[in-house]
Length: 109
Image (tube, rainbow, N blue to C red; front, side, top):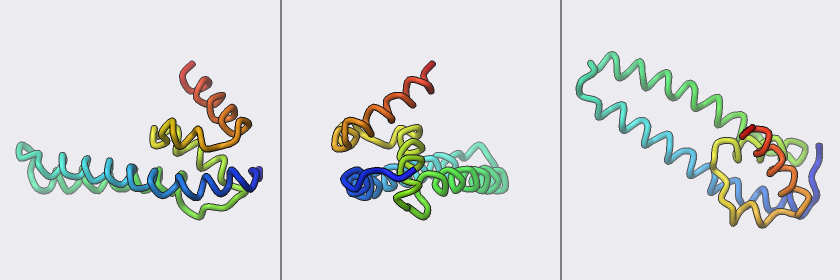
């Protein structure tokens, strides 16, 4: 499902800060695991491995191999992870905003 050229340009622009926010979130989760002194090193290692495995799946779905044909799906996944600001969303066309907001309504119901 291709998107308009103008939305594709916006997507490419907002993708990077969203990726940075996601990576920041993951690294904060990593720090919490590492700082959990009540767990053994092995337990923390296992928690860290599981966290990174799970987060890697999410990052792949939302950010890997950006193509115009996949941009809406990736944008929907970025939004589902709460990584898209309202200012960023408002840069898209009315049609794209309506599609994203429709998905939000479906998720929230």
